[in-house]
Image 1 (cartoon, rainbow, N blue to C red):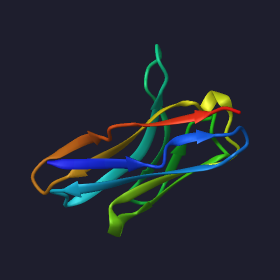
Image 2 (cartoon, rainbow, N blue to C red):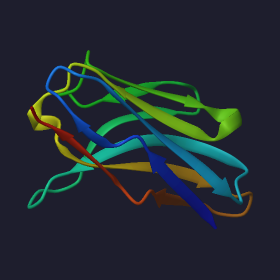
Image 3 (cartoon, rainbow, N blue to C red):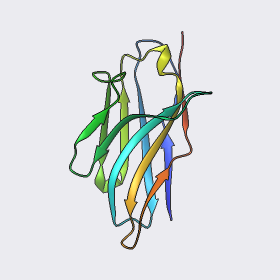
Length: 119
């Protein structure tokens, strides 16, 4: 099994910055993809950003130029640096990892961390 533990959420003023972290532990041979999704009440969970094992990244149009997704493979950790935050970025942010254990490949989710952008 694999566990993902997130940190870094909280209240931030519009225009401010916040950094989310998500660390994986457990039976891990290789992490194929790491990423971040977010969800607001009444809406589907949406992709914010992801990074593959070859370091290629994908971003939602709404966060391009403001958010940066990076990873530290040695620490099995993915980060989301969020700058120029807007009230519409308010959501619960979930990290996601696609992990190969050496036997199987599965997707895992973090527990979610609330980010609130408000003055």
